[in-house]
Image (cartoon, rainbow, N blue to C red):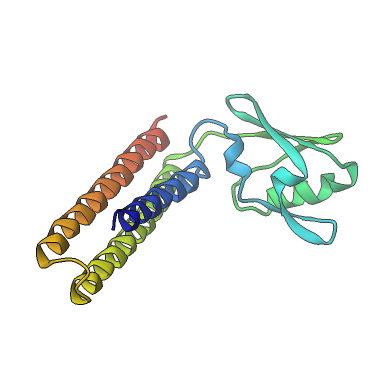
Length: 184
């Protein structure tokens, strides 16, 4: 039974990790190499993440630098960044792209907060799905006579507590990200 609890904990932690990854891709006032993680580049007849065709670095707080390994890929990477709906206009400099980050206006900040709320809700739903799976497992175990009703109730409380902790962590991460986005 403890193996099942460990599995639930691992899956809850996975929901938090996925949420953190989603938040990292949201643009705040500062440059981050994670901003370009979601960009896919048409390269060598297939679609690849940008970090598989170039190094992405942050030399300054408001600048992202992309060092492309293959000179023939410069146009494709430039096009992928421009078409990514992130609002970036790269400056081509040989095999390097410099991406200056403009200030976020109030409207864009509010949009980013809404997007972050959507990510948080997805993470909460994932945590609730894990909780449901755990509760179903416990009910089935009780029905099959593997555990007693008291054990089922006690373990259900543990699963609920784990879910509450996970959702609390998600809410805390969300409020931190909101503050970071709204900071001028």
